[in-house]
Length: 327
Image (cartoon, rainbow, N blue to C red; front, side, top):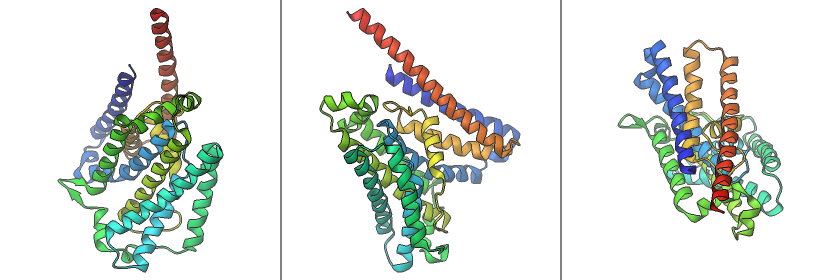
């Protein structure tokens, strides 16, 4: 029953995406031109990677508000690495950026798991701490495309069979995360923690350790997203990723991941990221003002939360009914 609910919600998101694209294409057929489709895929790539990491955290009934700052710190670190070491291999730069993000995630996870401080408070604080470190490090500097290797910048625009390389990276991240959550015990335990942390602890699950690794994964993916951000835009300063954390949470919630934890999937979160990116591109074509664009996203978030609660209540009633019949 739970699996069917997940499938229905993800299919609903996909249907909304198809309807939005269809209506926009009917108004302006250039909306589905090859270049515009490529831009949509590139625009949703970074948000989708961040949404995958955020979904892992929210499934445990937590939230990571520092992902935008981690992305900015990692992006700037990548640029500085290329400036100070012009011959550094691109895979090394990717590993360094990802490792820096993982270190930031470990700080979040350690404070939350060891000190048992609410994730909302911790990550709100580290949002400003990491951004402050970025500003202190940058000291007003801006790293431009001329400071980065051409091969690294080509990675941000290159395609394989018409599909951007960055989009393929996002798909790989999505498939790996989805597989681990579904087929590994440690992944399934994250859902148990989100459903009821106390019951999970009593059943022998190492709640603190699992939550720590959830934040570690979110930080690592934010670090990877920072490297890809630098490759795509070529220009990096201390404001990279500013305010992005709210879009990430919105994508995850719209994608069907319960804000109260315990249900949802990374596939839905990625679809939510694609849907929000498409909304940002489609509504101006339809003549919708920026105010109503934000209102539409807000309405989607409220609708997703309302649907989540309705499904949770319905599931609880069905489970109680089954238990009553069983006794």
